[in-house]
Picture 1 (tube, rainbow, N blue to C red):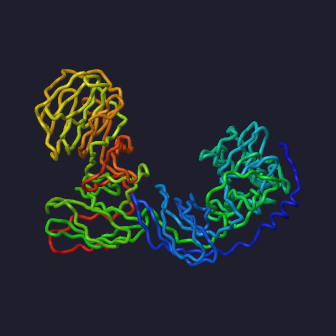
Picture 2 (tube, rainbow, N blue to C red; picture 1 turned 45 degrees about the vertical axis):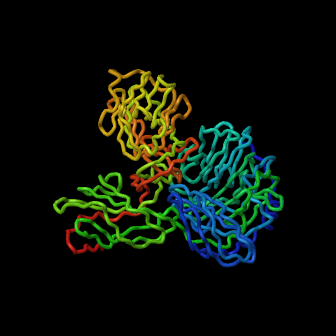
Picture 3 (tube, one colour; picture 1 turned 30 degrees about the vertical axis):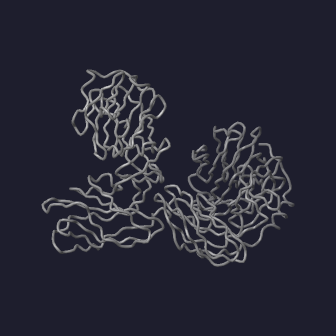
Amino acid sequence: MKQMHSTLASALASAALLIAPVASAASGDIAVTGSTESGGRLSTISLSFPASGAASSLWLAWGAADGGNQIGNWDDLEYLGDVPAGDTTWTGPVGTIPVGKTFARVFRIAADTSLVELESVSASNGAYVLTDYYPTGSTVVRCDFQFDDLSSGVALFGARKAAQDTQFVMIHTTDQGFRHDYHNGIANTRKMASTGTRYVVEMDYTSLKTNGVSVVDLHSAGASNFTTPCPLMVFAMNNNGSAAVPAPATMYSFQAWSDTARATLALDLVPCARNGTAGFYDRAHEIFLAPSGALAAGTAKAHSSCGALVGSSAALRPNGADRTVSVTSFYRDGRQPKADLTFTAGLANCALVAVHGPTDAGDDIADWPNAAFLGTVPASTTSMTATIPWAIPDDTPHFFRFFLVSSIDSATGDSLRLFEGLRANGGAYVLTGFRPTGSTVVRCDFQFDDLSANVALFGARKASGDTQFVMIHTTDLGFRHDYYYGIANSQAMATTGTRYLVEMDYTSLKANGVSVVDLRSVGVENFTTPCPLMVFAMNNNGSAAAPAPATMYSFKAWSDTACATLALDLVPCECNGEAGFWDKVGSRFLGKSGSGVLETLGEEIVNPNATVLSRSSTLPLPPQSALVISVR
């Protein structure tokens, strides 16, 4: 491999001038004094902290694990706000923390007006950055970058004594692609990079991964015991004191850990400019690293996380995952089971779910035949008495369990709350992706809220009397069944506020089990509507027509007359705070279209996929007496 050598004396001298003793950052001096939640997630937070003589900024970090007091050990970082000099409190909003990120921590960083955080820095013409970190056999590196020129072999980072001697280097060659140089071995791959493509590379003693996929085979059974003779370079490799094969590349972030468990952060390099010079700020050591040569600065960020760490909070559990439920006693008031419960306090409101069945169905709510939503448990609530809404006969064996849940759907990560009903005011409708055919069957549970005009509850068509599958109610003839090319009316008039279970297929329209439209087809017609079905209106060849002021409790559609293949299973819901339907078939949210309003109503019901925070033990039916079962 062709190498480029240069002296490092001047670079080492300039770097030494920039390295200052790390300030001992105060930890644990930020206290969380209050919080609110929206949609099952932390939405605002109130903080208190000691006064500072200079301005600072607040940042929220989160991750799947507790990253400790080093920002770089956390998965993501969000700017919260600025703290003027002398202030001791702050309250403000928090962005949506993804599901699975169950830990968070607030950091306070001293402002440094000479530093500007950048989206990226780019190297060309042999520029590189020398760090003061010496990789070992246990080093782990993670960086986010792109190559800008691959016309020759390039080293993105690393250090070594010589080729295949005491090395920890990531190289890309023109013939073999990504290369993993470790200790005294070289492992190549046929995985070729492309210029302008962004990669997240992770390299340790076992493998080299790009975007989560291993591109270099395992070539070491264990971490070797070595330390490189020279410190690591970025945008080049340190070849025993000389920069070699510098890489024209753009770097977005660079991190290195000194142990395979990633517990000790050795480098946390953030693209940054100090007084106009582009380089890296190392948040692990709170120093700026200037380049040898010139780096091109990417877009400046509005807020900089580069500066001295002056404080942090304790680790938080932002989605309520720190909360637990315990049963202190379980008894019956007559035939009504009751329980005295205790909870740990937390940052977010949660919900309490009770289940029961003839056998112990285990740890999943969905496996129990009966489940009831008992209500919200506010963040500050630590005890309550719950009445279980089932009266069980004495001679019936039964088992009970309590679940404390957040509204986060464990299958999708959405904040999902299910309700009894969804009301449309006559200008709103829901567009599905399903196009009815001649074999479609629909069953829905609803009521009309206003019948002063002709309204369509659901359907799709090309035009009136043409390729249609629509249910309408008219002011003169009542329920109407529009199918294919025909229209069949009924003298059965609906009334507002009356709940109906409607079933419609190619043969008839039934309301509450009674046919209200005569049989109008002896066989299934072979057609598909030209547009997808709407609920609370009909899709008239792409336009919403005759929207219905109505309340829907459930809506199902099958694609075959035998009702073997469910196409839609719509449940009223609020998804991330927005009212609409949750389609259980596609695990997707269907929101409002049109200018009107959708609103959920009625009792909240159990989402069987809700994220479970805590479970009680399984409890048998207590005896019908004044005796109380104490649970220890």
